[in-house]
Amino acid sequence: MTASTDNKTSQSARRVGHWIGGITSDSATDYLSRTSPRTGHLVSEIALGGPEDVNRAVTAASAAAGAWESRRPIERGRLLTAVAQIIRNNADHLIALESSETGQTDVEVRSQIEGAAGFFEFYGGLVNAHNGEVIGLGADYHSYASRSPFGVVAIVTPWNAPLNQAARAVAPALATGNVVVVKPSEYTSSSTIELAKLASEAGLPDGVLNVVCGSGQDVGEALVRHPAVSKISFTGSLRTGRAIGRIAADRVVPCTLELGGKSANIVFADADLDLAASGSMVGFVGLAGQMCIAGSRILVQRSVYDEFLDKLVGVVSQVRPGIELSPIVTPAQFTHVQEYFHTATKEGAVARVGGRPASGESVAGGQFVEPTVYTDVNPDMRIMREEIFGPVTAVMPFDDEDHAIRLANDTEFGLYAGIWTTDVSRAHRVPRHLQAGTVTVNEYLMDHVETPFGGFKKSGIGREKGLEALHHYTQVKTVTIKL
Ligand code: NAD
Image 1 (spheres, protein in one colour):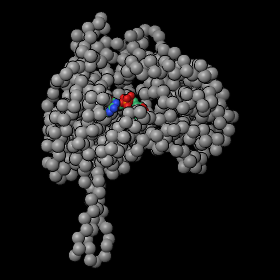
Image 2: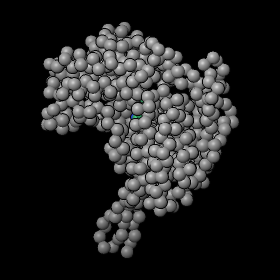
Image 3: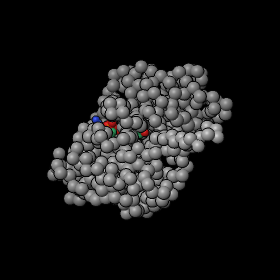
Image 4: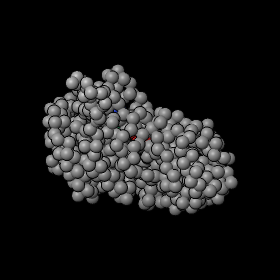
């Protein structure tokens, strides 16, 4: 898989090595050629590591663990705040790196990079908010439960929002005194390597944050199996999550799983339909639908179904592939999304807009599909049950609140749900019944570092973000003294 030299190869492809113990480390084996999903040009050659590289990274992390854990938390917090600042200072550079591999628009990547800085800022300020508790046992005892880090945390991330997803797990892990080895997606590793370099420039000690690039089989699996790794944080597909969960169970190490979704976005008749149409559009075309939280099932109250559908089709038709709409990040995923177009047609769904690869000058050489809205769907169709991970949604009518809740919960996933309503009682009542880790009302896409995030059902185990994440990166130790 060395760099190809076809006529799309650019002379300026960068080489991306691992980051281990505070220095760049070349691949001992080979490099993966990474072409831009937007243009088809070669942009980077990413090291393909193996178990040896993983072992070096875990050894470097283990060597740094004691000193990092022993630091006064406020000092760790200061360093994390410095990392937030250095990310912001280098935002343009990080945006260029990230978008060269994801092809996403500047606006999309900028908000993810700002989000990444936000994670370090937030957890840097929280280092003393998680000290444990004193437990009352009467006059004869003094008892307390303190929070200890696990040691070496393995963080495995996907390709859709690489820097943001890495920061989401790295920041709380470091804040609580753990050391980290990250395995980014082999398709989009550059920005995570750059994050580690910048963190080092900001003063993070060598070995505290390491990154090993390479495939899931050669690096990801070796990392989660490594005997010195004592906590796993995985973000990615259900299939890989299951495989990693099995390894974690065998090894008896805790494992946070942030997996996929098939989220319902429910539009009630009393909603502001213009707002609902534009918010629902952003909810499935953002990052070209390559979001675990994409609103890929839009449920609309029957009395406003036609009116809402016209408005939705109107706003979706304005979205221009290659300009507002990003490409599909990997070649395999590009094929996968197109297969769903065939499946949808075969099953009898009707594409009101889209349903095919995009064409024209703005998408030349890239992996673009048209933003797509299907109607005439039923809950058993594959496009209503499976995560597509492309800018594709299906719209279906419902009769009343109970019907909407039944349809929304009719999925193996449970990551996210949206509601559009002007009835304040409904805005509180419906979320109680939705089987989803996050429910938003009157704005679909919300991304706040302060709010816990994670899945019900097969969307995952554990939580990232918010104060909640701190629990998942620490274990409780109880000390009781007989007085
Ligand atoms: P993926 O599961 O194919 O890969 C994710 C990561 O796991 C990559 O780094 C990959 O190299 C690694 N990996 C693959 N096989 C492995 C193995 N056997 N052992 C260890 N590591 C292995 O996922 P993807 O295609 O990169 O990302 C898309 C998926 O991620 C979607 O399902 C999406 O919903 C999900 N996702 C979830 C969240 C969330 O927070 N819940 C966020 C973003 C993406």
